[in-house]
Image (cartoon, rainbow, N blue to C red; front, side):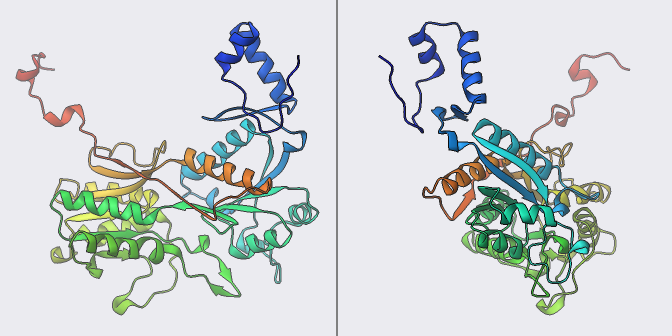
Length: 380
């Protein structure tokens, strides 16, 4: 008797299937691969093998703001994210194509979607069942939604918004610094004006203050520590709380300048923090060589930086940095899962905050400063 399985049914485990049918591992693997290629099965990482409906093979567009993947100051995080999204989509039943929005200098007056004409027409004509958006302007996301296409966004708006838990990151950083005896904790916030964009001709208020400074202040208060605005460095800060024009500096250049202005020979020692939370790993990468040159990595100031799992940006400084770490793989998984639910008309959360983990400084073998006599090795 042949049992009919409805779409969405989860099959037994690979081992159970193989034993039930009585075939080898190789034969079972080839059968699953063949059925998956024909769109009859799909595999969800960490969940299992499912029966797929023919209509499950959906066309999805991944649309990125080009600023994230061009220029000399681009973090490897974005390439990692795009690659992981592609991988996760291939494991399901999505046909994924990757596109980029137009850079600001190519946007025509009155062009509300900021997409090239061919891509805009494909979205308008209903070719795509859903869109994964990375860093797109609000106006672009809203235009896509008005075409009746669901959007899941990271670092931008969407029907489902996937983002970093800035409160958890600030809380974790401040708690760890406070545990190490820090009482004058500073914050460095990087800012890229071209990643903000304009709405109705006006610069959009960047997330820097909302997503970094305010949670930082709350974390300090929760630990009984004062908020000292003179220890906060944001490229737009000026005296009196007003904001200067948007900086053209890269994140790395901002980090280098912050380090020099805070710990350089002409800086005021009274304005130096004893603990520091850096909210951007790209900025921290730019600051580290200058901090080392100025002798600020000798332990006199404790540092915690944002980091991305698998990224090499902070390589070589793991022994002097604590890290609040986000996993790009988790971002890709959440985006794909949320879009799948939206496309299939199932309930999907409007907001997903990603968990962060604490990575303490790593003690390197040579930090014991073992002498030749202790080691038993002959002199060089």
